[in-house]
Length: 524
Image 1 (cartoon, helix red, strand yellow):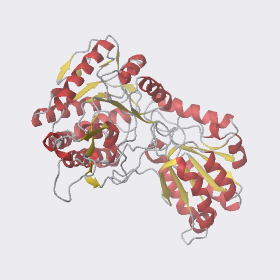
Image 2 (cartoon, rainbow, N blue to C red; image 1 turned 90 degrees about the horizontal axis):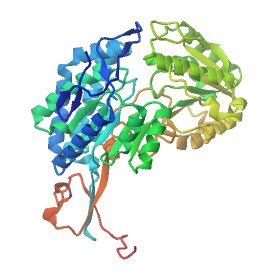
Image 3 (cartoon, helix red, strand yellow; image 1 turned 30 degrees about the horizontal axis):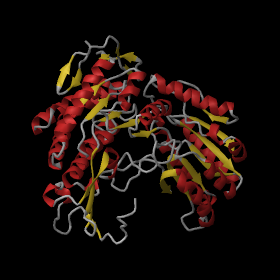
Image 4 (tube, rainbow, N blue to C red; image 1 turned 30 degrees about the vertical axis):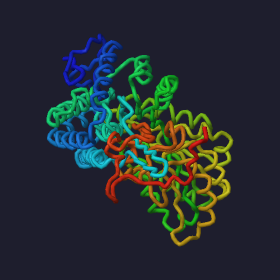
């Protein structure tokens, strides 16, 4: 059976001639059900429906989007068992605590947070300048296409995850491009979305789903004139190709690409609690078989006996730990290639280094080591991402060399410094943090980076190549919705013609006033 695609509220047999099947990474067997590769003619129909829907949504109050998002969360929860079973089969991720107890509740929680942002308009940053009569607010940008990744079948899914929720809260229709690793999971989400659309009376084209496209058609999709913006989480190579196409057409695309999430462990921290840090690092790096975008893939430690003892402790823990299942054979190949690149550049293998060792698609828990001096000779190659259950230790001569390493880093989602809790490392911390701060989106102290809270204060973003733009977050409501808005400005527009959110209201509402004292209306 070839599953249909969802176009403008209807499940339609694809006109494509190519199909694919997902594989169970634990058994390495193909799963039942075929899914289509949509040709451009089909994508064009989806785009036309999305453009029509965007026009229909103009001026629609945030309450309508909130009602849909809340109904969608309810519909997802009704399908919990089916969704969890499908995702477990397609990804090998454990039912509990990962899928059922963690990721699915997080997904419905962020949908409900997005509903709250849509209802209040808090994402839209309305501003009223009473002196000049100018008012501005973020409004819908138009149809948004969302590409979900392989490692979060729920929380980042193209049809249910954070980018999806943010785009809907901002008042846009979404075209979801499913990930080939978990198409059945995505199809079940789409069924829930259709039910929520019907229950809340939203336009049928609010949510559409295609499963796969050719690379060329993907580039055409993100650069099409009818698209407002795109969100992408995945491999750097593909993301940069999509960005090139979108940039060429002047279309914003928000990318989460790659990150090695450096962790600096200072001498005082090792003297104080080396064993505890080794446990924290091992748990963080091997969690989910290392398949998190916030996985700590680079650890900088001081040289000498304390650093050597710390590394030996971690090697022992990695060697003894069970080997998890990877998401796909593609992840295994990428991991193999990444470690091979590091070894060829001069990194010493400490443990692991070979495919296998676990159930199904797997790779041994792996650690490598290089000196700080060697790292600084070629920092680019030693920052090669190995997405999975492994990490690279960098042994620095002193805090000054640690600071140089921090300055040499590419952009990352996170960076962490472990230091003595009584202040013995404060001087070293200051010099390392100065360089690290501008290289990461989220700076942590004494805490591994793998957890990402769905909070308005969260920054799940960072400088390139962690993302395509350092000024936005992919997680957290209402802030993440700003990516899928455009700035609407009103100058001397009559009050009754303004959007409701810009009309004069009672104190305490979400907009802010400015007095216009700095305005220079006759410039330009």
